[in-house]
Image 1 (tube, rainbow, N blue to C red):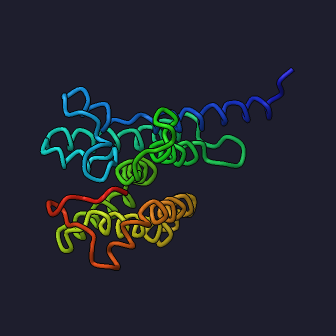
Image 2 (cartoon, helix red, strand yellow):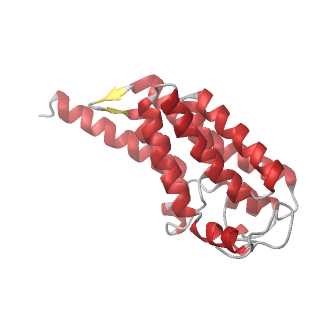
Length: 211
């Protein structure tokens, strides 16, 4: 017979798994194929995210990819957190949202070869604690306008969010946002190397190398 603790554990595991599976939906790949643009993994950097979709020349499709990738991060953390709150000692929304980003980066449907999770992380931040999400979005936009590097803008934005959350005393969000920032640095290791060498292509610039 399943007791209360076992019931909570099962619900928590199913919630976490649901977050991962939703995150695994490769909207960039699906949309480009539906639009007759081929496999996005054969274009530019090979990434399935909005930045690489933009390299197809279809700005509307790139915007829709950005919206959907960000939307899945927002929806999971917001809806799970609103309906389940804490399951055991952990915040179900934050855990499910974190795994949504993991799912985008390592989707089961694509042999665990996905994107870098920037849009999904920004969506997660807006759903978990919108002021931190707004700070991250503003930091991305400002950095992109000044430096014209999408990767650098992402790293600045995702670093700003946990600092702001910590400064405002929203410690659970700060911890998860910090973990996602470190995860993003790991996923952008090739970009960081190119930035240091002065070889990273700017937004709208030269053809992106394969990651």
